[in-house]
Image 1 (cartoon, rainbow, N blue to C red):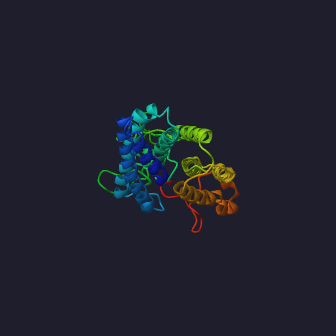
Image 2 (cartoon, rainbow, N blue to C red; image 1 turned 45 degrees about the vertical axis):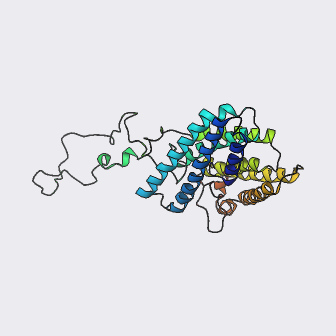
Image 3 (cartoon, one colour; image 1 turned 135 degrees about the vertical axis):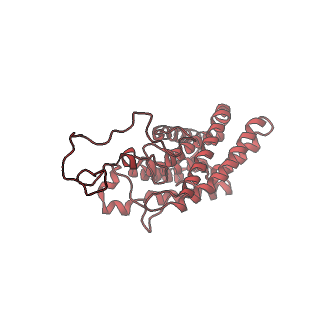
Length: 302
């Protein structure tokens, strides 16, 4: 995600590399790096605080608001100052495309309408608000507080409660931070663009390329609910790593090994639950909760 340790390394290296030729770009990259480090702590905390029933506490709401705000500010910096300036760079261009997809990934997890993850701040259902619930009692209550009468009301009202007109219903609690909407299609499109660019200009074992593919696979599983597609992407990426012949330094080698390990786990993710429920592998139903021994998404890639 935007908080990936690999991404943070490349952010720091890119900022240092362009300090002299483009101080403005370097300063923005340093700001995004600081934001990313802060965001990584918040995402880990949000994952630990996630409740099985999906009902957020006030502390979880505040944490979600902070995550959405950090992501919104990071995206503004990225789209206004970084993306327009990266045409002449290689790794930095891939990183900018990947970060853009990552910020939208966070919007999908925490702010999407309709919600696709239990991490999100859901919009209240107008049909479940106290004002809209029908009286379940029998008969008509009397003014003097006596027992309900069995007599029918003089007028027969048909149908249920009438909801508010479009644009006037309950909004997501985080609507004051970011416009509510379905961010899934645009996030998916940005992940495709980042993956295609990484395939085009980076070799198979490049750690930044692996970072793009790892989060893309996590996004397919957690948000798109394309479980087979997620496993297929992870498997193809690992195969491309072993086919790569380019040399890499020790630091990139260690990062690549760690990401390949994560991708190896993601290749098998959900297979235990899909054996019990064959329909779950088709992507037509939301994913089941991660089982006790099943590998979960890597840190920062919830």
